[in-house]
Length: 262
Picture (cartoon, one colour):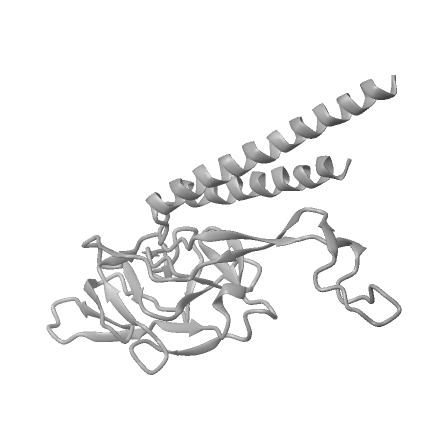
Protein backbone atom coordinates (compact mmCIF):
# COMPACT_ATOMS: atom_id res chain seq x y z
CA UNK A 1 0.00 0.00 0.00
CA UNK A 2 1.50 3.32 -1.18
CA UNK A 3 -0.03 5.23 1.73
CA UNK A 4 2.49 3.65 4.12
CA UNK A 5 5.48 4.96 2.16
CA UNK A 6 3.84 8.34 1.54
CA UNK A 7 3.06 8.85 5.22
CA UNK A 8 6.60 7.74 6.11
CA UNK A 9 8.04 10.55 3.94
CA UNK A 10 5.72 12.97 5.76
CA UNK A 11 6.98 11.81 9.15
CA UNK A 12 10.60 12.10 8.02
CA UNK A 13 9.97 15.62 6.72
CA UNK A 14 8.36 16.78 9.96
CA UNK A 15 11.13 15.16 11.98
CA UNK A 16 13.63 17.33 10.10
CA UNK A 17 11.32 20.33 10.51
CA UNK A 18 11.33 19.86 14.30
CA UNK A 19 15.13 19.57 14.27
CA UNK A 20 15.41 22.90 12.41
CA UNK A 21 12.97 24.58 14.79
CA UNK A 22 14.78 23.20 17.84
CA UNK A 23 18.07 24.59 16.51
CA UNK A 24 16.46 28.00 16.08
CA UNK A 25 15.13 27.94 19.64
CA UNK A 26 18.47 26.75 21.00
CA UNK A 27 20.17 29.75 19.35
CA UNK A 28 17.71 32.42 20.46
CA UNK A 29 20.48 34.07 22.52
CA UNK A 30 23.29 33.51 20.01
CA UNK A 31 24.78 36.78 18.82
CA UNK A 32 24.11 37.41 15.13
CA UNK A 33 22.32 34.06 14.61
CA UNK A 34 19.96 33.94 11.63
CA UNK A 35 16.77 31.89 11.69
CA UNK A 36 16.54 28.81 9.44
CA UNK A 37 13.33 27.62 7.84
CA UNK A 38 12.74 24.13 6.40
CA UNK A 39 11.12 24.18 2.96
CA UNK A 40 9.50 21.12 1.36
CA UNK A 41 8.60 19.88 -2.11
CA UNK A 42 6.25 17.16 -3.30
CA UNK A 43 7.72 14.01 -4.86
CA UNK A 44 7.02 12.48 -8.29
CA UNK A 45 3.48 11.55 -9.30
CA UNK A 46 2.09 8.36 -10.79
CA UNK A 47 -0.13 9.15 -13.79
CA UNK A 48 -3.00 6.68 -13.66
CA UNK A 49 -4.90 8.75 -16.24
CA UNK A 50 -2.74 11.40 -17.86
CA UNK A 51 -4.19 14.89 -17.96
CA UNK A 52 -4.55 16.26 -21.48
CA UNK A 53 -4.68 12.83 -23.11
CA UNK A 54 -7.37 11.91 -25.63
CA UNK A 55 -10.38 10.15 -24.14
CA UNK A 56 -11.90 9.07 -27.46
CA UNK A 57 -11.09 8.62 -31.12
CA UNK A 58 -12.82 11.92 -31.86
CA UNK A 59 -10.11 13.79 -29.95
CA UNK A 60 -11.83 14.66 -26.69
CA UNK A 61 -9.30 15.88 -24.08
CA UNK A 62 -9.22 14.65 -20.49
CA UNK A 63 -9.59 17.88 -18.43
CA UNK A 64 -8.07 16.75 -15.13
CA UNK A 65 -6.70 13.22 -15.19
CA UNK A 66 -5.76 10.99 -12.24
CA UNK A 67 -2.45 11.47 -10.43
CA UNK A 68 -1.23 9.99 -7.15
CA UNK A 69 1.70 11.62 -5.38
CA UNK A 70 4.50 9.74 -3.68
CA UNK A 71 4.97 12.04 -0.70
CA UNK A 72 7.23 14.90 0.31
CA UNK A 73 10.93 15.72 0.42
CA UNK A 74 13.04 18.46 1.93
CA UNK A 75 13.80 21.08 -0.72
CA UNK A 76 15.99 23.39 1.35
CA UNK A 77 16.75 24.74 4.78
CA UNK A 78 16.72 28.42 3.94
CA UNK A 79 18.45 30.93 6.21
CA UNK A 80 16.47 34.13 6.81
CA UNK A 81 18.96 37.01 6.87
CA UNK A 82 16.77 39.73 8.38
CA UNK A 83 18.15 42.23 10.88
CA UNK A 84 18.18 41.22 14.55
CA UNK A 85 17.55 43.70 17.35
CA UNK A 86 20.58 45.59 18.64
CA UNK A 87 21.36 45.29 22.34
CA UNK A 88 23.55 47.81 24.14
CA UNK A 89 26.42 46.21 26.06
CA UNK A 90 28.62 49.16 27.01
CA UNK A 91 31.76 47.19 25.98
CA UNK A 92 33.99 49.28 23.74
CA UNK A 93 35.04 46.38 21.49
CA UNK A 94 31.46 45.21 20.91
CA UNK A 95 30.19 46.35 17.51
CA UNK A 96 27.01 45.62 15.57
CA UNK A 97 26.08 46.12 11.94
CA UNK A 98 22.88 48.07 11.37
CA UNK A 99 21.93 47.06 7.84
CA UNK A 100 23.77 45.10 5.15
CA UNK A 101 27.18 43.55 5.53
CA UNK A 102 29.38 41.04 7.35
CA UNK A 103 32.65 41.32 9.25
CA UNK A 104 35.54 39.47 7.59
CA UNK A 105 37.81 37.23 9.68
CA UNK A 106 40.69 34.90 8.85
CA UNK A 107 40.40 31.29 9.99
CA UNK A 108 43.46 29.24 11.06
CA UNK A 109 43.53 27.46 7.66
CA UNK A 110 43.84 30.79 5.85
CA UNK A 111 40.26 31.03 4.63
CA UNK A 112 38.22 34.21 4.85
CA UNK A 113 35.03 33.70 6.84
CA UNK A 114 32.19 36.12 7.47
CA UNK A 115 30.16 36.87 10.57
CA UNK A 116 27.56 39.20 12.04
CA UNK A 117 28.93 38.58 15.53
CA UNK A 118 30.85 41.69 16.55
CA UNK A 119 31.83 40.59 20.07
CA UNK A 120 35.53 41.26 19.50
CA UNK A 121 38.49 41.04 21.88
CA UNK A 122 42.23 41.78 21.79
CA UNK A 123 44.81 39.00 21.71
CA UNK A 124 48.23 39.08 23.45
CA UNK A 125 49.64 41.16 20.58
CA UNK A 126 46.83 43.69 20.61
CA UNK A 127 45.19 42.35 17.43
CA UNK A 128 41.42 42.65 17.09
CA UNK A 129 40.06 39.09 17.11
CA UNK A 130 36.86 37.07 17.51
CA UNK A 131 36.06 35.04 20.62
CA UNK A 132 37.88 32.13 18.96
CA UNK A 133 40.99 34.22 18.32
CA UNK A 134 40.44 34.67 14.57
CA UNK A 135 41.84 37.98 13.34
CA UNK A 136 39.44 40.57 11.99
CA UNK A 137 40.34 41.58 8.42
CA UNK A 138 41.97 43.90 7.60
CA UNK A 139 44.08 43.42 10.71
CA UNK A 140 43.83 46.12 13.37
CA UNK A 141 46.38 46.30 16.19
CA UNK A 142 45.74 48.31 19.35
CA UNK A 143 48.92 49.53 21.14
CA UNK A 144 49.29 48.58 24.80
CA UNK A 145 49.38 52.28 25.77
CA UNK A 146 45.89 52.95 24.40
CA UNK A 147 43.62 54.53 26.99
CA UNK A 148 40.31 54.27 25.14
CA UNK A 149 39.06 52.97 21.81
CA UNK A 150 36.45 54.61 19.61
CA UNK A 151 34.81 53.01 16.56
CA UNK A 152 32.64 55.31 14.44
CA UNK A 153 29.77 54.53 12.05
CA UNK A 154 32.18 54.01 9.15
CA UNK A 155 34.22 51.47 11.12
CA UNK A 156 37.22 53.74 11.68
CA UNK A 157 39.07 52.65 14.83
CA UNK A 158 40.76 55.36 16.89
CA UNK A 159 42.46 55.37 20.28
CA UNK A 160 43.92 57.86 22.74
CA UNK A 161 47.56 56.95 23.40
CA UNK A 162 49.41 57.76 26.61
CA UNK A 163 48.49 61.30 27.70
CA UNK A 164 47.62 62.54 24.21
CA UNK A 165 44.26 64.22 23.74
CA UNK A 166 44.32 63.70 19.96
CA UNK A 167 42.96 60.33 18.76
CA UNK A 168 45.28 58.12 16.71
CA UNK A 169 43.81 56.25 13.73
CA UNK A 170 44.48 52.53 14.12
CA UNK A 171 42.69 51.23 11.01
CA UNK A 172 39.34 50.63 9.36
CA UNK A 173 36.89 47.77 9.88
CA UNK A 174 35.70 46.78 6.41
CA UNK A 175 32.36 45.15 5.61
CA UNK A 176 31.50 42.55 2.97
CA UNK A 177 28.15 41.87 1.35
CA UNK A 178 26.83 39.29 -1.10
CA UNK A 179 24.32 39.22 -3.93
CA UNK A 180 22.72 36.14 -2.34
CA UNK A 181 23.63 36.17 1.33
CA UNK A 182 21.26 33.26 2.00
CA UNK A 183 23.62 31.19 -0.16
CA UNK A 184 26.46 31.42 2.36
CA UNK A 185 27.58 28.17 4.00
CA UNK A 186 27.27 28.11 7.77
CA UNK A 187 30.25 26.38 9.43
CA UNK A 188 29.38 27.03 13.07
CA UNK A 189 31.03 29.44 15.51
CA UNK A 190 28.81 32.20 14.01
CA UNK A 191 30.83 31.99 10.77
CA UNK A 192 29.88 31.69 7.11
CA UNK A 193 31.88 30.82 4.01
CA UNK A 194 31.47 32.16 0.50
CA UNK A 195 29.94 29.69 -2.00
CA UNK A 196 29.14 29.74 -5.74
CA UNK A 197 25.50 30.34 -4.72
CA UNK A 198 26.30 33.41 -2.60
CA UNK A 199 28.48 35.04 -5.22
CA UNK A 200 31.82 36.73 -4.62
CA UNK A 201 32.16 39.01 -1.60
CA UNK A 202 31.75 42.72 -2.31
CA UNK A 203 33.99 44.61 0.08
CA UNK A 204 33.36 48.20 1.10
CA UNK A 205 33.19 50.80 3.83
CA UNK A 206 30.41 50.90 6.37
CA UNK A 207 27.77 53.64 6.11
CA UNK A 208 28.28 53.99 2.35
CA UNK A 209 25.94 52.99 -0.48
CA UNK A 210 24.88 49.36 -0.13
CA UNK A 211 26.46 48.85 3.31
CA UNK A 212 25.07 49.23 6.81
CA UNK A 213 26.57 51.35 9.56
CA UNK A 214 28.55 50.15 12.57
CA UNK A 215 27.36 50.78 16.12
CA UNK A 216 29.94 50.60 18.92
CA UNK A 217 28.91 49.23 22.35
CA UNK A 218 26.14 47.17 20.71
CA UNK A 219 25.66 43.55 19.62
CA UNK A 220 23.09 42.14 17.21
CA UNK A 221 20.70 39.64 18.77
CA UNK A 222 19.36 36.57 17.02
CA UNK A 223 16.43 37.25 14.68
CA UNK A 224 14.55 34.17 15.98
CA UNK A 225 10.98 34.93 17.06
CA UNK A 226 10.06 32.68 19.99
CA UNK A 227 6.29 32.91 19.43
CA UNK A 228 6.44 31.95 15.74
CA UNK A 229 8.89 29.12 16.46
CA UNK A 230 6.61 27.62 19.12
CA UNK A 231 3.65 27.95 16.75
CA UNK A 232 5.62 26.19 13.99
CA UNK A 233 6.66 23.50 16.47
CA UNK A 234 3.04 22.75 17.34
CA UNK A 235 2.12 22.61 13.64
CA UNK A 236 5.01 20.25 12.90
CA UNK A 237 4.03 18.01 15.82
CA UNK A 238 0.41 17.81 14.62
CA UNK A 239 1.51 17.06 11.05
CA UNK A 240 3.76 14.26 12.38
CA UNK A 241 0.87 12.84 14.39
CA UNK A 242 -1.45 12.91 11.36
CA UNK A 243 1.09 11.08 9.20
CA UNK A 244 1.47 8.51 11.97
CA UNK A 245 -2.33 8.16 11.98
CA UNK A 246 -2.26 7.50 8.22
CA UNK A 247 0.25 4.67 8.79
CA UNK A 248 -1.96 3.24 11.53
CA UNK A 249 -5.07 3.47 9.30
CA UNK A 250 -3.23 1.88 6.36
CA UNK A 251 -2.11 -0.97 8.59
CA UNK A 252 -5.69 -1.57 9.70
CA UNK A 253 -6.87 -1.58 6.07
CA UNK A 254 -4.16 -4.09 5.12
CA UNK A 255 -5.09 -6.23 8.09
CA UNK A 256 -8.75 -6.17 6.99
CA UNK A 257 -7.77 -7.17 3.45
CA UNK A 258 -5.59 -10.00 4.76
CA UNK A 259 -8.42 -11.33 6.90
CA UNK A 260 -10.69 -11.49 3.86
CA UNK A 261 -8.09 -13.50 1.95
CA UNK A 262 -7.84 -15.97 4.84
